[in-house]
Image (cartoon, rainbow, N blue to C red):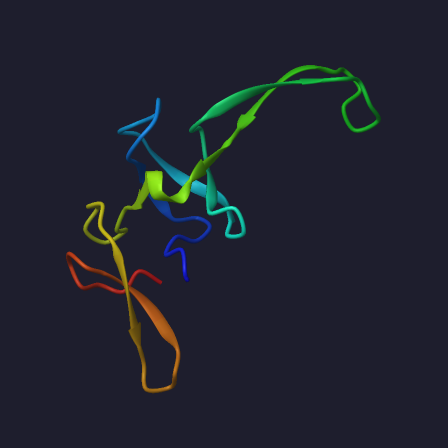
Length: 105
């Protein structure tokens, strides 16, 4: 089952404390069905000093969001919509916006 959302896509948050915000996808975790969205679901993590983090302290970073709580935003029409898969004669699949019928990638 494909997730329909890839890295660098713009998404709209449908549920949770960040509901109504838009952001760019930084990473997709298909095994967990989660995505990490830029500046959305910021969590604070307490880190001990180490070689990679000499200072230590409280680090703020993006936490994962379940894929069902985000929706793709079409780059052409700017409306949130689902992505349909359309096959070409060569056997390659493309994602197509269901609202404006334009190719997403």
